[in-house]
Amino acid sequence: MKRREFIIKSSMATAALTTSAVAFGNGINFNMANDTVNIGIIGTGDRGTGMISNINKIPKFNVGACCDVLPFRLENGLKAAKSKAKAYTDYRKLLDNKDIDAILVATPFSMHSQIAIDALDAGKHVYCEKTMAKGFDGIQQLVTKVNQSKTIFQTGHQYHSSRLYTHVVELIKSGKIGTVTAFECQWNRHGNWRRPVPSPELEKQINWRMYREFSGGLVAELCSHQIDFANWVLGETPNQVMGTGGVDYWKDGRETYDNIHLIYNYPSGVKAKFTCLTTNAKDGYQIKVMGDKGTIILDYTHAWFYPEGNDKKQFGIVDGVSGASVTWEKGLGIPIQMEHKEPSEQALVDFRESIVLNKKPISDVITGANTAICIQMALDAMYQNTIVKSPNFY
Image 1: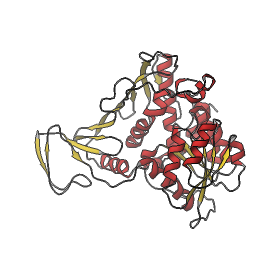
Image 2 (image 1 turned 120 degrees about the vertical axis):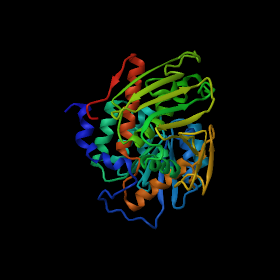
Image 3 (image 1 turned 30 degrees about the vertical axis):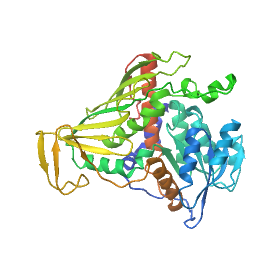
Image 4 (image 1 turned 45 degrees about the vertical axis):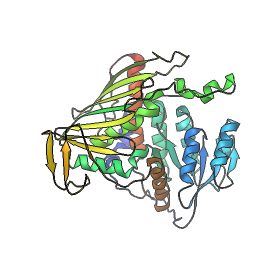
């Protein structure tokens, strides 16, 4: 079987479930509704340590272990943990700890697949940070293992858990902006993305995002969230991508690009643009979903509806949007109101709930694999300067 035929034959039969909030049990007899879930953090850099802070807010969720190969990173993780977490420098030793129920993978991108596979083999539930796996082989191997496992696997595309983002997806699917025709997404910053290195030999371990061996660069680390969202809204995956980028400003020895520009084509005819800069932060993070009846714009935690039509229009009650009566003027959007937690915290709440209730996560191995495939397509398109068609399993 060709690797590009694999996922559709082994997994994509369940793809219809990935765009809904419906979850189901996976057959494992797991009853710990009144017990604490003990989680081990593998990779205690900025992201892993930040997630520890979120876990500390969640009742009956405990950081029982931390692992990192860099001593100062490991120390930071241990300090962040409220409980007396055990320290490890070898993740396999952590996986041998029978008191650990689940693990969170927050290592460099290139290590995700193997660590997650080893954790599943050890019977641990897995929260695997985005992007889920590097390269088609890594994606395929991890999907195979998850399908064979009886434990929970969640991919860390946290906006899938955002109650605001979920509500916006429901609004779009209900026709609020009409027929979706395009996405325009950006995640722009002003800075070199480089971390300070205390000793030269640690350069690649600390600044791994700069090197192709370990990283997918801006597309994997940033744009992946927005690509995941476009797939989610449309309920489909792109059939081709074109893109460009370069090391055009921060000429400091990095290999991954300091600016990227991608256009994905979807089978429905929708075009989705993704831009990421490190030289200009204007408007920062933004997702713009355009339809023939209006536009919705999202940032991290807010959303606005911009109707098509006259410069000034009176709206009555709009489900989930605004209040009883809203006047819209050109250039000013109607706020979309929805109470919600910070997305990363909510994703961890959902992960714990999936473990306790034995239900399928919304952001699971299939949504994670679909986005990871999109990332690899983009990398191939940029690095090979060609239009990349989707793999056959689409």
